[in-house]
Length: 167
Image (tube, rainbow, N blue to C red):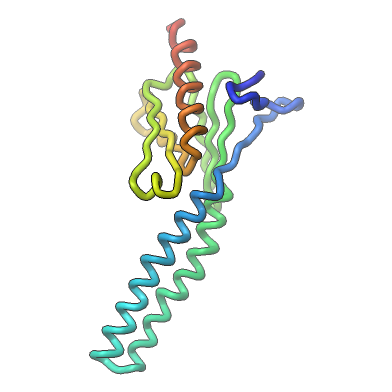
């Protein structure tokens, strides 16, 4: 089976071919982490140093430690995200400690959206969100290249229309 981009959707053994997220999402999230926690560290250190003394200003090292911890956690989270297009459904897998795999049958898709906020657009990223009849379905693929997001939207919409035509 072939997708619109010429990628095989399943391997010879019948296993899905997983596609990971591009590194741009990881870069964006790490930059936001450093900017926000760096600003908090500077403000906290400056204010506490000014009003409470230099000993209390050392508490500004806590956000710096959080940056180091968050850097590693963001990398682990990013590497856990992947998706696979199969003949009848889309698989989305994510999670480090609690692995979550979402299976969205093409015939159950009602709406496929491509969204891109101002920060995502600055980094050249877009997200694909799938809406189904089930209210609890959280089928989102974040941080895709906009061309891949549009390709995926068009393919999923086409497959969804073809599968739901028989209902």
